[in-house]
Image (cartoon, rainbow, N blue to C red; front, side):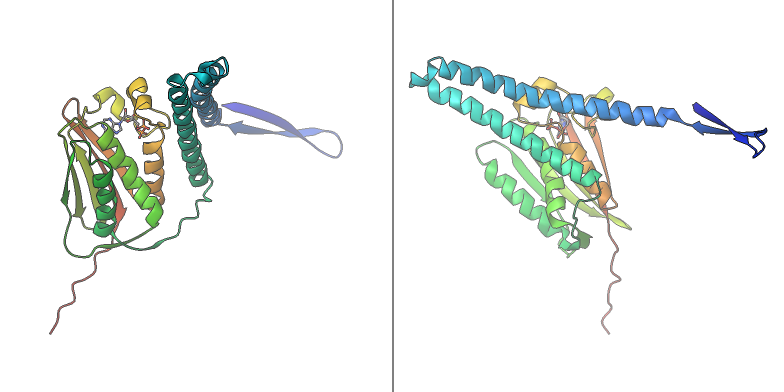
Length: 266
Ligand code: ADP
């Protein structure tokens, strides 16, 4: 705790009181420490692809450019590193928009099972060459929630793309939607590597990765789940994870839902 004292002085110059202002600096310090850590992380994440690009570009200008075998490979590496930086900057922009409450969310009626089907259809297309199977357990009746369509698609996208990344060959990914009293719960269950107990509480933190090298190789920015959490909470929902190390992981999120009274025809 930090204290500032000021004395109260009468017109006559005589002191007749003291004001003490007490500040709780621990919260301030924590925020400041988080900010410093965030800037250090961003710098590091940008420096890594930049350093790699610089060395490949140097090799190209030192002669590799004229080698018809090597030149395309090196150019390919620099293109991949550029893509990675673009993904990172896009994710950072998205987070900073959500932080500043300037997220321009536009709420509309959304048919939840339809949105889920749409996202999973896309993943089925893009994972055609991988041996991964999607199973859906979605209610048939229309379930309309209020939300920002693009943001909710991104939330699901971030979770499903992780489950694809961490799934083994031949793995199944189960996607389900359950209607509860005042919310819907969407779950994505994979049969992948799982997350060790000691890491699980951190996976929604910005830049947190269980296996840094592996996650980077898989193209991750370390921000996907942080963004997913921001989107869920901005909708008044929640997000959580349970995992069995070596067996698989289930990510779930909830969104508010008011069940319509059934209209009884007479
Ligand atoms: P990344 O871009 O690294 O995927 P995320 O924020 O999306 O970043 O995820 C953070 C970390 O959580 C990942 O690096 C990974 O270690 C872990 N993780 C996320 N989803 C899964 C999953 N389905 N199975 C196992 N580990 C996961």
